[in-house]
Amino acid sequence: MRLLIVSLSVVIVISGCIQPEVTEMNAYWGNITESYSELKAEVMLDNPLPFLPLKDIESTVYINGIEIAQGHAEKIETNKAILNMKIDNERIRDLWVSHMKSNETSEMVIKVRTITDIFVTDIESSEKFTETLKTDIFRMNIDDIEFKAAGKEIFAIEDIELNRGEVSNLVTEVVMSSKLVNSGILDVEITGIDYEITINDVLAGKGSNNLDITVRTGETKDFEIVLFLDNKKIPEWWIKHLKNGERSKILLKAKIYVRTGILEGAVIIEQEKTFTTNIAGSLTRI
Image (cartoon, rainbow, N blue to C red):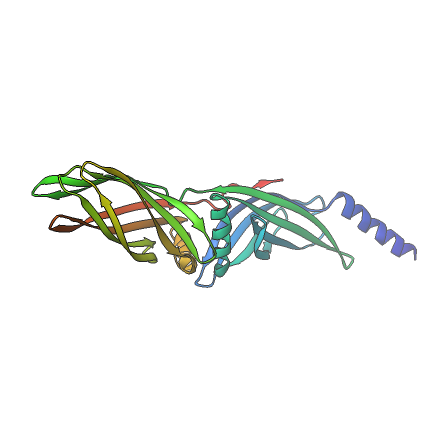
């Protein structure tokens, strides 16, 4: 009985005063496959009693409160360890939708729990590491486009901008706005638009719209149209994003069909943008 009391006393002292703690975390990407992405982390440990066995370090990853991964330690040393957290790539769509709906701002939280095995009793302590993620993925300013006949400008599309629109689980809207400027002597009709948006060479959005817009001679008219991205394509281009060192290329191609008098033609818009992220690149203990 005395031995049991002494053992319990030791456990209580250790659990209350000298539990191992994770003091620092440096995350990086491990294996990237078609089905999952490994988020790894080297963590530094403060272990007051290094001779006691550290059984495991459990981890859970959240984005805006959404749990996206769990993991364990794959290697434990006296004062450091390597954690492995696997993210199901299909969950990236949930992350994307939450991030976009939060105005492209997200809070990442990684919770870790050290587990020490003492006298067949698990002693635990927990810490949190957090980071704020901000992006501005779709904003683009595109050069003015001119439509000419016989070498003379008769129509232009000016102040062309792309911005993120509404987001659902199925689609992400990209809003293209501009000014239609008719500097010619004839009215101009806008009859349609075709577009494609690729991300890392993955066709993320494609569409065609018939339009019926008339811009009178000498008139300037605001123009806005919504382009749609298929969110089911997110995991496909996301894998390439990670393999490219968290770097992606967006390519917009659009044709706006124009008619004036007996002349018909198309105004071509082609714009490329690169965006980068640094997910879990500067985690802070809280």
